[in-house]
Image (tube, rainbow, N blue to C red; front, side, top):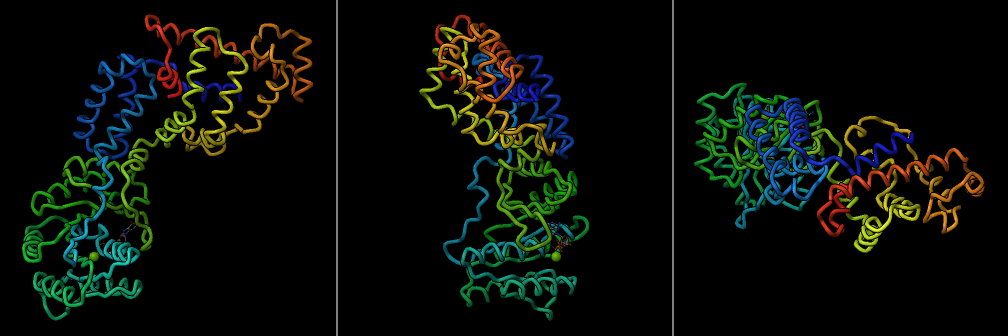
Length: 443
Ligand code: GDP
Ligand code: MG
């Protein structure tokens, strides 16, 4: 348990500097992770060199940041590629209704299902929606949309007589205007593979109705294939965004990164199940964590930063510079950790721990440590060197613990001091340890 505790402390604080060696190593792991997550190898290559450059950059080396910073660089880079600006993911409604949305993509990618999901999404935002069955080649496709419409109590426009998708789309928009609909969602036909007839039909619909959005619906499970298809659709049709479906399966979301990078178009929504409510707006942050499969490390870092109040950090920095750490500091740290939430919740955020299920670290361990320190006299707290056998016995009794536990705690403090000494050496030449450096400790 102690070892695990220490490992976590070390991870939170991080003592490694970013050197060329460990960057190379880390980059290797990131590359593997991305490839495993189904990211296009060209995208990986470009990405990895961007990260390496940033990590090797003067800024990072000079500020002596530990390797958690590296993870943050990678994470942030992914978020940026995915479209750091969340407003991009929003669908802008046309000030002159109706807003026309065309869904395109290969057969089976999830267009019809997504049409229903989108309708529900707008419905919840108090918009009056019209669904348009414009996949005229399969009668079952029209039925499928009508079933969804009934389920949602949303109007469905269909015309089984006409066999021209362009005319139907036009008629539907006309009807939507007369019925004062806010949003029109057009479900189009797909093919198993891209073919010219289909593309021409889609282009004709586009030119005829001038949609506000052309959303490419991509099956995340098809990984690399989805990327190539997205590229072609974008080149031929000029899509405005992407909806990634079937993210509830094994897909690790790497396709998101590739599609975004290759098309330059934002991902707007993700489908996470067959049911109509399995649909979410796209958050680059979440997807980045998913792709890296490393728990929410960024949240952890931010929590740690928030937990250190400015004054506290300065006081600690001052102290470390003058003397070493004592038990008062340890108690202080304990309180910071508590403010960050339970120990277990912190562990869950750490890479490697997230998938491990139950971990044998409990908050009661922290309480015992607190009890031990609380049983010390002020003198003992500021100078652990006076802790002899009889004092330790008294403390153990007072805190309801054992001498062995008290010993372990003393050892921990000694170790932390050793670490601090090493840390101080890294700052040789700097004349003052400031709060930013201290914060780096917690990264
Ligand atoms: P279309 O041919 O593009 O219209 O695709 P459909 O909407 O008919 O969907 C094809 C299949 O994928 C159906 O069985 C859907 O239930 C399923 N599907 C669509 N979206 C999702 C999703 O987000 N998750 C899962 N698990 N299945 C989905
Ligand atoms: Mg369909």
